[in-house]
Length: 179
Image 1 (cartoon, rainbow, N blue to C red):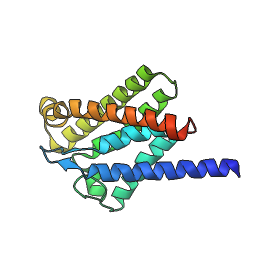
Image 2: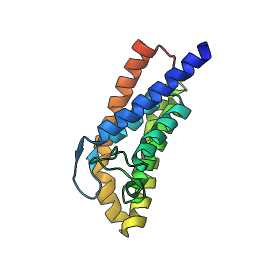
Image 3: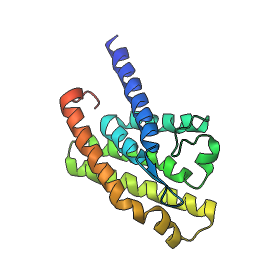
Image 4: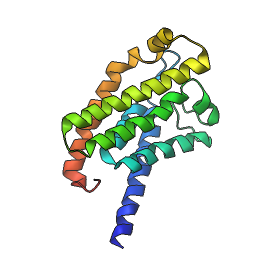
């Protein structure tokens, strides 16, 4: 019974972080071809608060909800067209952010967690930028100017916020139960 209760908690936490990501995606500023939104904060939070497999599961649930048509993507959009559209690579990159953050956090060193967050974000940018280039036909320089450079500092701030909140939640509420 105890193992079943722990697994149920994992399901609930993953679902809550998928829902949080969906809500955060709606807080957006349309600054260009890729809108500025807070969904990356949800991916970082999943990595900070869940074990690696559950962090990935959380982001996959978020994407699955969007693919079946529930308007969870930025701008209250849903459907498979969003995922195969110009920003789909960045949405897929949320899995990289969540997984790298959760994997690095397991080592228990703040600087490794921060490095994992940076790696996840770099992988998200790489996947998203290549995807954007393929869909739109823009050059690497243009794609970086539209899709990466304006987001680096805000995304670093989102990572720092997720780190601080995640560490506080783990210390005070979860007491290490997510490891």
